[in-house]
Length: 503
Image (cartoon, rainbow, N blue to C red):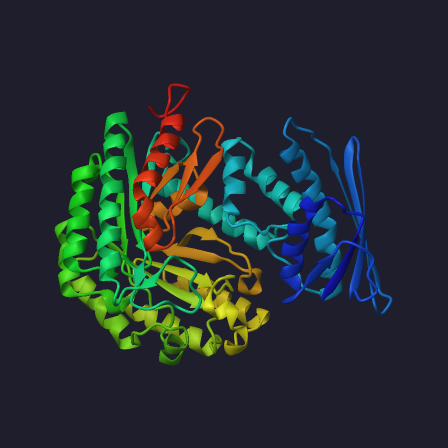
């Protein structure tokens, strides 16, 4: 689909125009000029005075003409970025409207293409806006459907029940620890994850760097009397390393981090069942860690083979029971909607198998074609369900979780996600992951340690977010972990000062 755009010369419109086009067309190209080869041409007109007034007229090759206009009060700010955002959203309104009229596809998330929709509602709650008004503003400003606004409200309510002090946790931090190794790499994955076999030298060097980071950051936190809210071991698969290496890592955590006994939650992703052993579960138990993930993704063996997960469905079930028998009291499981070759029958089967286990939480992901994944590079190999079937599968997940007493407590969205849907975390009451809430709602600094770990430093006064990422490949990390640790401490020093900081 070639789309000719007229009247929007500013290059800052390019990305939002492309992202919205991607919601409607699998392959689309935006051309900022009149083009005879274009499938559709959209001419924009905008005027900014006391109001922002924008119109869009769409013409296709068959001579169909569609028109949309939008007007909103102009509220200029001191920030050029915020001023442009208002204009960009107005343009997105009319652009989305004419594309919906052309295709007949209604986007339930409206013009939103970002990752964290619930942040918008949290912001309105913090500003004291009545919920009825807040909901209407979300509909008016972003064209979000009533269905999605209701989901957002359920999640915000649940988060504030689980973490009543969510808006005042800037004085604490959470820690993410990245272990960049897996038994094999899944076809849909773009996380830092390297096949661990034959890499023991890299693993040893990496763990040395990680221990260094934990010592230095822990010492800084102790010196500044900064508490830790949650710790999350992710990756990769943190249980890819040996039981002995895990034992030394958690010992380092207890030695280096402040007041570990009072950290609200420590989670270890044991996502790949083929990495779970009785010895590793004993180590987790030794260090009082009982919240883990064991991720089936699917209960259809052919699917697991197609996506590169070298474990069996039976192994997933057996390892779940083993973990339960050995004292793991809060187990999360992940399912993915829209995996290659899967439709409603396969997903229904996965839900029925989940019912036999009843983990404390269930995260339902919708498959996303991530740019660097093997699946995206070889799309022709992977046949996936269409938009209508994906939506029906999401509906099945919502019905199943409601019937079985699970409540939604966090969600996030991704680019190129099937059906323009979302990923939703459900849990039995009081079994929610606090870390998942913290990472999605961005109310406090999260310090990333390890290979590929991303840090988000949040200014306690302005809320401004500074991103910082460690190198993704083990060799680069091993060569430079000291520098990256000091860089993070310098950022922390700047944030945690007397100007209203946690210090």
